[in-house]
Length: 377
Image (tube, rainbow, N blue to C red; front, side, top):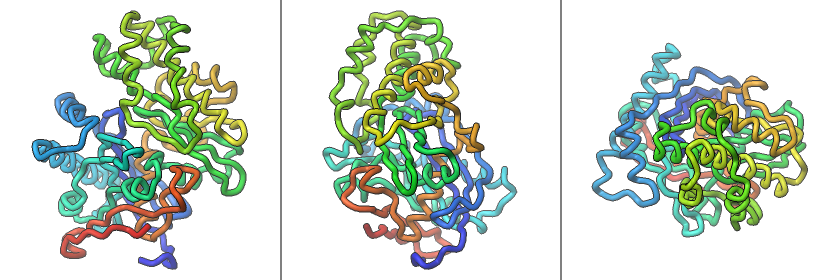
């Protein structure tokens, strides 16, 4: 398909974030520039045993011993597609492409490495739908950060929302997209998101997350400790910049002497005030912050964000977006852009040298012989 072909395509996006919650799947109709319509979406949570297996892959390149876990992960994504189509009453034949993000297990762009597990060829065979996967590799190979990758979708959604606007995604890591008037856009990871809070609760008997921010709300922020946590060179680096899920993991050791509640409060404040520090890198203060990702379900975190950024902070639902589906929709959008040879990343979103496309196309068996095609940069 060439750049001149702009008929709307129907795409399914699949996203598995660094919070390790599960698989988000969403339907989107787009011409690669405009959002024509959004469709059904769903989240399929990981089982606790499978989540633990995924956790065992974090921070390293997969080996032959991980083959079965990667296969199971891919089949779970295939099931998510089948279930989503059933929810929507759609046949696979009406879907043009699947955008398969995979699960990030290691992200070290300074070393030229980003790893998302998942077998795109197997997913295409299981679903009968063409698949675009491996979105980030071309960007990193060209010197980019390889993240964040949803900003172009945020900008496409935000056409009539007041500017300057910040779209804040709080997953395992938090990232912000600053959108100004015209085509001005800047994006970068701000710091920790939910990962530290989740890991703190998991290791201190509070479950796998601080549901509703209840533990943080009952605790007291250790301000001296928080000051030390925020004294991190990452916050002084100019954007674009990105993080691995575990880049701030030493914070868990440093707060280890606190109670469960005080630790949750301090780590929640760490996320919020890291976002506030990010404002200094933005060309102009956002008049509004719109929050997507799991963090928006934490009222304690949302309240801390409002205090920290001194501006309106709202869930994206207030402007009619679906915050649970947004990241999956973004990879549906990017899959279509990949098919059209359009950029997936910009110098102001990942630090890449020039706008870059990317992704690897896996043809479904009905369409071709299973060949893979890397998109040119």
